[in-house]
Length: 313
Image (cartoon, rainbow, N blue to C red; front, side, top):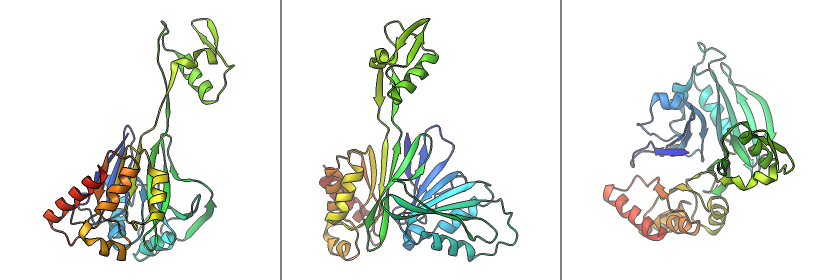
């Protein structure tokens, strides 16, 4: 369902591209340097998910903007408190006298607290704030086949961890000599609406929906988590367990080696041991450590990943 690719090299600032099966758009988590992030990948991106606006997570926003100008559609940007002003200020620092007013629209969704974000529209050429509304939702982005939930973590500033969550699917197992037909969709609709008495007609024979519910099984939607900069403390770990337990795949920051945990604590980052332990506590088999300190050489990163894997298993 979700196919994530780290677009930044180990010595570059973090950027993750997420593609969705049979879906025309991409999604980007954080705007690090990421030289391998292509022009078409930026143009085809439908939403940007920003964890926080430290320079190593936000420095490449202008380049992505550069490639998106002219797509003539709305693109969503989500992030923590203050991101609306930061996006607007970045954009307004350029001259826009030659741009068409329909070249692009940004909707910035600024996460204010759990279950609430502020939506603001920015359009060229003046990029003034329009249609500002506070929205009460536990999801910050929705598509037909998936939603994106979030958790606010502490990095001595708000930092947003994102959960991409595919919708559950109802599947019907054809047996007892039954053949497919429009009744399949009708039965799914009845199941999802809990309408046990709905009449379902199959080859001129009428059934109550509840008589056919045994043919249905629920396929749980895949879950992909991205947890970037956060302090490795009890409060953050409690939130991570609440939101990400049972995910199919999680990308988690692993900024420092264990022997540098004092730097991690000072800078409100996680380190190999703690990132591994919280993934183990969440039951995440496919956990990928990302976003390493740029002070490390290749061998240091190998050792860091080994420490993470040892703690995770």
